[in-house]
Length: 500
Image (cartoon, rainbow, N blue to C red):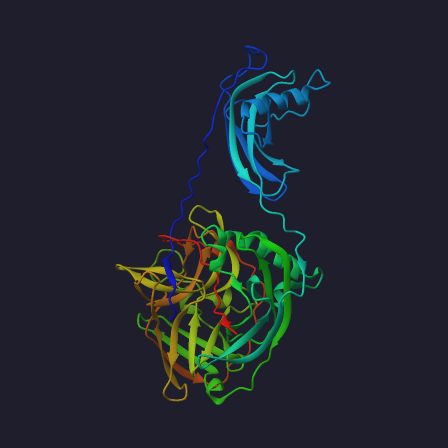
């Protein structure tokens, strides 16, 4: 296994702090006695874009305590507030449009990109009386790359080939020797919609405005971009159409405003006997007694299968422990006509089980609150006497491998091990379905994860082809205990480039 970062999934706490607070002289020289001079504000920046920001404003007063808020680039906040009051009163006897709500999200518009701002909220009456305790919060608008355009600076070509003795997708880039770029690839279906049409520009805009800036929070631009011509050996990919993308960048971490993209097609191969031998129905029995009847069906010759039947069986719906709830959950009868399946990779005559997301779902937690999650196949590792879900960085590591010596009549599935980037060794001991909260704050389990080694015994050569649709879930069935520890941000996806 390649070097990776592995983390035990657990609780994530976020603490935000508000700093600056001051009480400037009242503009009216004392104000009215009925004004709440103790009016205090709490501010939170909830969203920032290139030309606008959203600020959640709350205060400790009453609904009839009027207030005003605005964003400024001035460093002298007291002076900016007084100037703003003069501006609001200019040519008027009374100020209109003051806020009264004790909690409101304010949208500040017409801002300049990549600019530092201070939002200030303060008590203000219609006659211009300034009262209470003002509060500020700082934010910086994002860059505006909405006008990024397609160019021919990077000539992109593709062919199936080999890298280090294994099948690989080779994407070659021809460009100037000093050309720096971010390389990415995406499936055609991801950037195409029947109604919206081509979304490639929107995807590139997402990379430039969201994904790449998040990498720059932790890495230098030189650590995840490339310079000059070269060939990218991508791991063997599934059949279908893809786009390879190069986005121009400078060493200052700013995009040049141009990108190139090239569509390419990965063609399905003729199936080999080594690949077809695995197709069929199997009983999978784990070391801890967990057992499922599963089907392995053809999906992409010599590359991938689909497996369904995992975590199904009527016994899961029984209440053998007498707590009034089913002991587990049979995935056969939870999603109507939809069949829950996951992909299993094939190479070197073996099956490879990878951590993967199957579908987004909503789960009801112990407090009867819905939690947005990703249902998926996850690997587990020992944490003392307990099991913890382990997420790899980048996501998608191989959890286990199945090998056979008798033409796939029987096989043994064993967990993989690998050295972490900090030198520690990670070993998968179990695998199973789980729902991981999209913000990594919770994990929900339904059935006991299967422990390695898992014995596979062929029951039938036939595996009926199945497909999966959109999940429609009954949230009350998804009420499971959670147990977590710790999580960190993912690393950017890095790709090896072979210099030409």
